[in-house]
Amino acid sequence: MPDPARERPSPDPDRALEEVLSRPTPEVIAAARDLAGDVLVLGCSGKMGPSLLRLLHRAVGDAGVASRVIGAARFSDPALRQALERDGIPTVSCDLLDPAALTALPDAPNVVLMAGQKFGSTTDPAATWATNTLLPGLVAQRFADARLVAFSTGNVYPLTPVGRGGSVETDPPGPIGEYAQSALGRERVLTHLARRNGTPMAILRLNYAVEPRYGVLRDIADRVRRREPLDLAMSHVNVIWQRDANAVAIRAFAHCAVPPVVLNVTGPDEVAVRDLATRFGRRFGTAPVFAGPERPTALLSNAARCRALFGPPPVSLEEMIDRVATWIEAGGRSLDQPTHYEEREGRF
Image 1 (cartoon, rainbow, N blue to C red):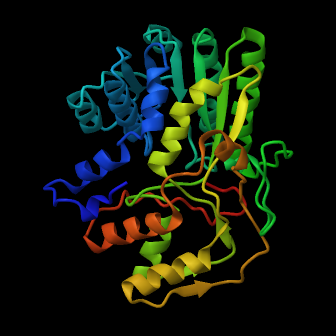
Image 2 (image 1 turned 30 degrees about the vertical axis):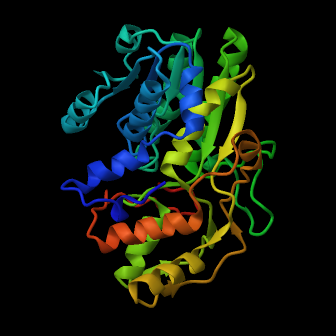
């Protein structure tokens, strides 16, 4: 996939980046051809949702099918809703925790559930549980006759020894903190309702999707460039290009099952934070500043099952690093939303 920073200059770098993040691969176009109906994306106004909507919309168009792609969310930023509508994607502004609003949503045979709350979980755990556990149950009841692809998180796993390869889907969960516990609650509720109602589902345990404006790589690059100390306690991470993670969500419809199929979604590497910082430091001509010892455990997932189904992610770690660095060097903006990937106690 070409790097937006290396293509023809655009007066709107963000729009050029969104074009790249939503550019469908042949595999995604083939998946769109097999959807057999509309796709409703719930909670689509976050960091990944707009790109997923655009990726789906473009794939449906390229596939030549009549499926509509519809986005539903609160849309606290009206400009985002307007931008999606300009791109030909119909939207619905609603509170998904409002039963009347949920009932009023259009029916669709394919539903993606992206709604979730991570940050603020420590200060308002009740809202976190409502969003991450109650809401998925309401959605599963409302769309019991659909196929449902639901985003979850690798935080449902405990920290595991570095070098072991990361947690696999059959490992016992060990969520740390209210966010991770409520995310496991989401999975348990969805599994119960899939079995009770016969709803085919896929649950995607994601960590961590990245793009130049946001994500673990952006966090590390910014700290290196600003010469801020980089905590090494969470010594290793997994990352995947955001478009590649969204592509898995689209292709996962073909694998929805009862009980739900569970897939870790991430890149193939256990990446050392020290190594990432060193690479960005060489790129920026800045020596990284490290703080604290490297701990022998980290939050790591093994996505071998996902790769067996869909192949390796097309964008490599080297490409991700280059794209993030190029974007920063060109003055590209940040979303200013740190991931707090280094958090080991589950306090978000």
